[in-house]
Length: 256
Length: 340
Image 1 (cartoon, each protein chain N blue to C red):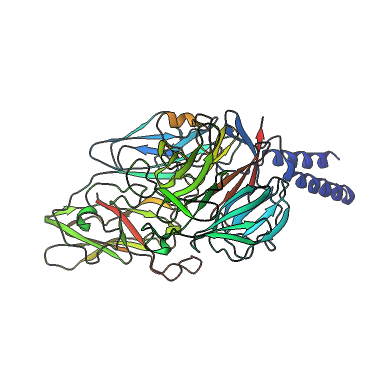
Image 2 (image 1 turned 180 degrees about the vertical axis):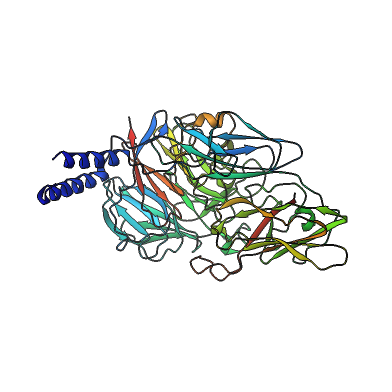
């Protein structure tokens, strides 16, 4: 009898505590996605009784958010909301990137962006201009491709490069998919390009929204860098636009 | 525990589990100030196999309390519910772009005005679904050189029978016809002038101040609600940053509307509801951020993921809300019971 009451009691508690709805993630604000010396990140969530937690080390440690966070180096912040009446939110993340190594020279893109997302200036320049696209995909800062994109540039004297950051937008419902892969090549003098970093993304489920992908590079000094972003290709069978080519949206590429 | 006890326990757990549907005391309440609601996601009793839906667009209630809902599923473009969510009727198979739904009493008989953005027309139906009249793009004007530019999303009917049609997926005009379907005049349209509209998705007539009737129009992509005189003269813009407003609904002293999303892209599942008071001040945001945040000039955003893409709000006599949703995986409408 006692055991039965215990089981029923625990079950009742479970029902009473059942939380049908999840919280939305917090709002992350910063003055610019790309900064020169430092930038400040603030988090916001206007729901009574909710708290915000954030992590700067990819979820290893979580802190209660109390005041804006000053960032002096490229930072990936993750944040979530909590409330006793609701399920904890999904984790939202945002990368703020310190402006990196500027290219000494740039080659024209081999494959031009597709209308109407062709931008207002030369596309290869727009990809390294330090200006972020907004949530409005028609703001003129996003370039849309329906095939692979290849950016090539370099310096007369070789430079050390540790990582490449590729800033994209994903909106599957709008036919905008993540890159299938990102490959970075390096070359010196008249030599041929060799692969120095690769990120395969086809099997990863990147969230919709603005996403920055980091590609770690083999240590080395290079005079030329080629960044090859592979578009997703045909939309999958379970997509309303199946068979049509997915869009690839890029607003910035940074080298660290 | 003996087998008999175990069986009893299982029965008891089953009974408790069935109470889950009715668990009320601990359900969260959404909204602010005087406009707070308990959420009933299981209000609708429709069976998907019998009454399939794609997007659930809009809702209207007749004077007997029956609720009509439009969906672009051509197996049943209009579903009719009682206030307990039971399906009473289903009709309509010819409206692939069934969208805006407005009910109007004309000399004692009620009619539905259904917009179809795919068929480039507005259809007036009786409550059994029979086609009575249709409205098309205005001819004899240079407004629509191309017929297929007309993609109506909403209607509002004036007491004199004038029909205000929002071409929200087309050229963003508000087109005004008389009751016989003769084109009278237009206003709005794309552009940058104060009365311009950008995705004029919803239109409503606002008689909350009977001596100052006006037309409310959502300029959805601008996150603005605009007021016009009945003759189309621009009166006022009410900016609501973060609110992609579907259609305004004037009820009592308030204006209610569903906010499809609060940020792009269009499938961001970031919607909520808004309620303005008699002075058109934002007073409650069920499912969204505190209205005070807007006073601090921060855009509105979703806080609780109650809705995916809310598309319309119906308000009943007790000021409970019924919410239909676009692109929500075939979800039927929710009911929000007002908490006093």
